[in-house]
Length: 247
Image 1 (spheres, rainbow, N blue to C red):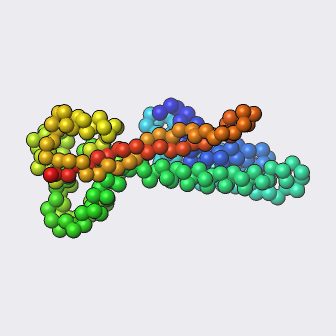
Image 2 (image 1 turned 60 degrees about the vertical axis):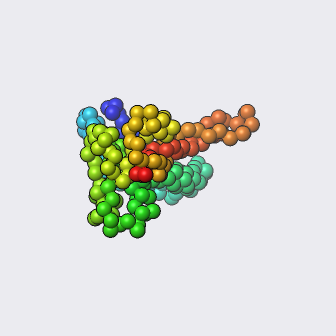
Image 3 (image 1 turned 45 degrees about the vertical axis):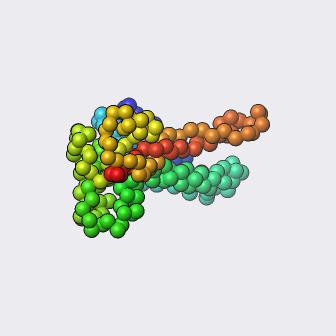
């Protein structure tokens, strides 16, 4: 990850529009330097130190989010208590930014739920085969599925065999009742399955969609309308996991 990834990507995605209010707190805190010293400065130093690590994840710096939210809240309170015309004009934007944050958060939740197609596939498989919960059923799980949500927490049936052995040959795969594969392209995968005889004893059983990417959906506004306000981000979902059943 780039050195400034926490500042330019992780924190803005976590705070959304509230990110814009954090630096404004510095101007609102001119008479309260203690707040700056206790919140903004420690948070920035913490982020800066962790930026030196080559491997970066939001969970490493999640502790600064409450501090930055506190700083933004102080600025909101500062604006809300002022009675001058300028602050009365910008105060509705404080509420508006919270509304936009809620909309964006709901979109992110929708995307996040679809980020674990492996777990979705196993949950679906177990759900539609409840009557076999006490029988010995063998399920092979490939690397992609294992990395996208499958853990002991979603392996519900003690009688089932959940096998994650890597690099099994086609012959070794034949014995499993169900095979779970991560796919980039459904049609290409099924063609490869047929052409290379990966397994001759299995057929398509389930296809699970997962998050693919975000594209900007444009709306038919007049040409004079600002382009930045004529489109909105829209998540797309494509097949990510295929489950095969032994014939």
